Length: 438
Ligand code: SF4
Image (cartoon, rainbow, N blue to C red; front, side):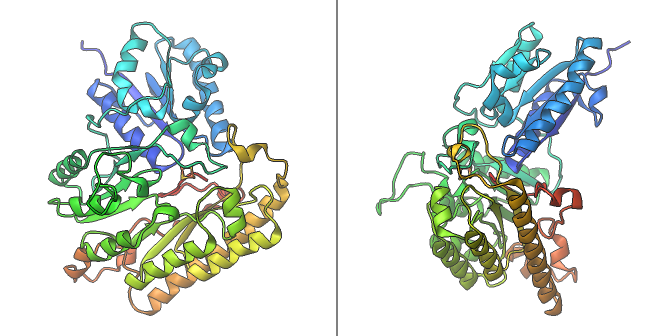
């Protein structure tokens, strides 16, 4: 009788970058002959793709791991893997904490999963957290959707936001070549995918690490150039991108989004705080005024554009007045969605060491007030569009012009108006389609 196939389970924490990494790792495992199981307790290989943005996500991993480590004592053939940002941050010390682990691998090593597992199956305990050049995506990911696909275009981040652990764990920016990205899109179009979301921790930085300059002296490959290069890929009807950084969001990019037929008029542009002084303390590189100017320009080109964002409350030293500036920015912009979070000090980040930390009570109170405002403004916007007789159209322009199908386009999108469950509201840790490093 043939051996039954080995089964694997992946649990993913955190942002869409982790989700995209998990899809690629699942693709590698299936190429290796593993089969997916929903139930981690039935899996021969359990992989946790982890997030270290907030302490509670990290603690959850340890609790899940504890259960699997216990299981490994009864089932020594079980393979236990921790990937992602906690793996990168903790490295070998994770093995000391959970000696049952077989493999600890940082996000830059996701495409190397097969090689790393081969070392594990040869009897080694493996830690792969060294700074690495990201392998080109040669794997066919096991995608959760058959319609929409994530496509990484840039890895890592060169910013140094004072609250953020991402640059420590995901390394420096590494842009993929435009031809390789286009090849991915062409393959997706042939497989029947209709929509792609181009991903990067700071996607507006795309191309600045690639060689070449234009006669005007700008980088040869920018996100705007990439959008022009990709927009005619056959089969792909809708293109989105995330996450944008206000420091680099240009009018040229806005114009391209207004012009290109396949670009969806939805933008995820985290503001983090509505107070310029606090933004300086966060090292964000823009002011409240600059952020508002971007929104004004954007709405000048695309009046119905949907805008979502991320915001942090309770950053060290945040005064009541500074928090109110965040509220007033939310009031002024009219977001469709804001991912909110109370500041969580992360090891290895400058702000975690500052003496002016706020109490948990103050953070919780501000978070609740911000969530209340965000929800009521989003509901207002939704009502406004309903009253006008059509949803805010988040489809691509080409799709709109030829639809005539009588459907409500607001319902055709799955990006908006996702409600937090009450249990999430307490700490703002909702899981969202677009979330950058809170
Ligand atoms: S918040 Fe975003 S831009 Fe800032 S360091 Fe983190 S990943 Fe980079």
